[in-house]
Image 1: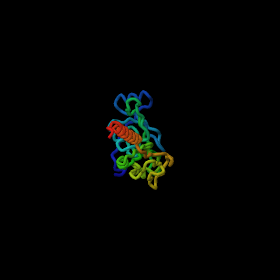
Image 2: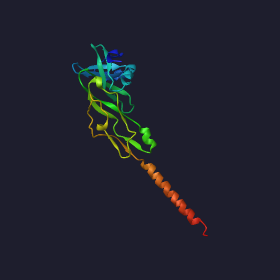
Image 3: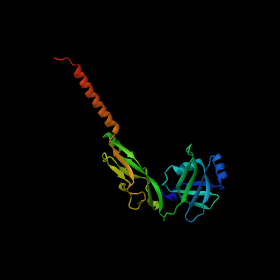
Image 4: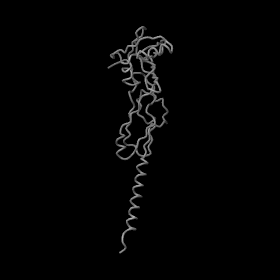
Length: 213
């Protein structure tokens, strides 16, 4: 399905200001703003169904948006989401109007596969980075960046520069930034040592109690 074939998400214009935003939330709506190259910023509101549709496919997805009350129907991407720090409820959303000819910068999820194979050998994968910042044309944006960790060994480090970035995409995250490391489970080693020590102690106790011949 192309962008032009997608269903249109409909938003409505709203008044600006804190009071207006609070009024939107009391009505079960989420205030937001649409901005981008070549347009004036447009304050909007979105219903719950429209919000779910915007968020269902991730931050890197391109949507078609129509704003009732404004002469706007164009391609947009979710740029930022503000949440209530206590409840996690979305309280504001930023939408970026994009041009298919201009490169955009955004973060895409890093998906690591093969962790089960590591676990089967007693190794642990410690994640440190879950998204990578990239820059590309909208048509070249990958939905995710996938890396197979099943062949990694204890002590191996996966850097952002090791990720398979498509030719038409530029990695913005520092190539030296650590994505994940593979470690041997310290607790398992400690438990094995404790078990071995306990067996030795039991053996020595049994030897001490054995009758002399």
